[in-house]
Length: 107
Image 1: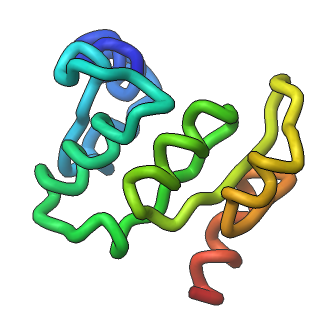
Image 2: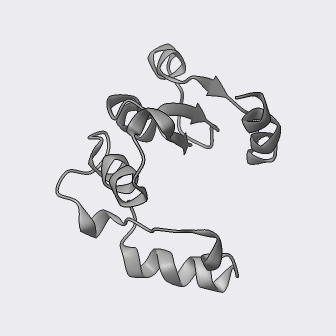
Image 3: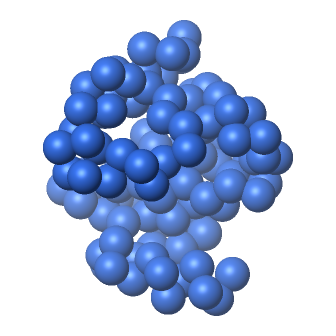
């Protein structure tokens, strides 16, 4: 939900900007998380149905938004307290993003 230009700058500084086909920032939508707007706009920009998309999130609001969008949700907890409700909305809970490639192989 960070603004688009700031996101592009961070990705460029990390030398991974070329790995993203589209970048949707919080400044491109009306309703932020937990509303699904940002994820639905990203799916539309990619030409993909929401059910074919995976949301990887570290926040309860992000998991709520991904679930509301009808997308597959993966929780990688960070600092926010995670409730049972958020766990139930998550299709998977990983300890680290390093687990994501193996998880995707299983899909």
